[in-house]
Length: 453
Image (cartoon, rainbow, N blue to C red; front, side, top):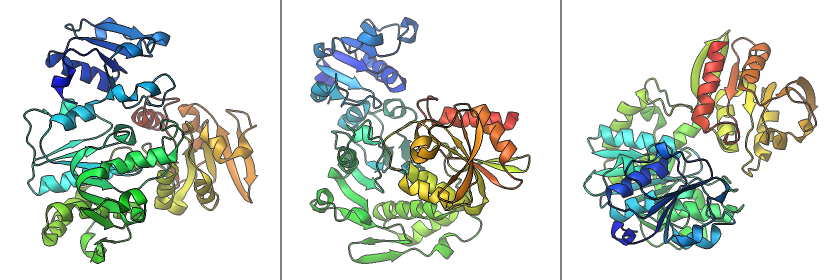
């Protein structure tokens, strides 16, 4: 949708969080005036720009007049499958769509259930090192219209991390579309359907000049039917163009001390190499870039972040792990050193069978269980009281639990039960919106409680 299409239209800003506020400010600068702001929470007049003259509709009636609007800028967090919204999907648009309608430069789109932020950041760092003018836009962070002047900016590449929320019903035009993995996630948002979630992810490839895809998806009919620009790779130390293999010499790439270790990060590096090989076409230069970058690349905040050793216990913050697969990777990373695991939170319809198997076969002895998902992983604890530690045998393994909603309670329990030189790991395998605004707020409270103890 173009700015010119918004003239003389009645516009709703649906959701007045960070992106909603940014959208309103942007549209006001384009002399768009017939706008209303809708949000389930209270909207205070002082939070609105002085030149805003539209309506404020909040609380329980915020969707009452949704029929009145011609165009609805929907924040990504609101599902289009909401019972009162599903009939209005044709009216929905977003900052992301507005960006792609106007920006004429080259965009690399990154998506996947896991590790898209690490891949985006590593790719950005490598291209900057190669003297490209690159802009990175995360799907969690500043909205794209705050980051990029869509009328005048002219970067060599924009790296745009795109979530399934952004890709639902939208196929962006991309220089490179990248898909690394798909696991069931956010199904409550996607109409309780893994098929709908998967298609949203695949949408990143539809209008991409180069389609870089994990080999596991080669047989999916939607991808198999795509005719041009496909590059397949795998994450076991090599990637390939159709039948041709490009083997990664890990002893060479990992020469010297590295901070980005463990198998799942080798996969991340492999995926980034696949993109670099498409853009740079010089494998010697790519190897030289990685040899320069990897010794100092530490990854993302809140991803396997080593907080410090307190009372001889090593505390690891993996708050960004909001899927079972991410937590499984964290458990494999620290292997036998983990004694205490902080687990659970909001139920997003994950399948926890594999995670349960990994925990029961590990050296983990203590579990801090938060509602709701911890009881889904271990139904054996469902009838146990909160805030009281207890020991239970599950499939022949003795585990000490505490069910709690308190971060302080968890930290106290971990200090009491974790042996010296063992690991206490915050890696919840589920989102945390039921108790915190986001994983960053959860991580900061965790670190504060650990350090205060």
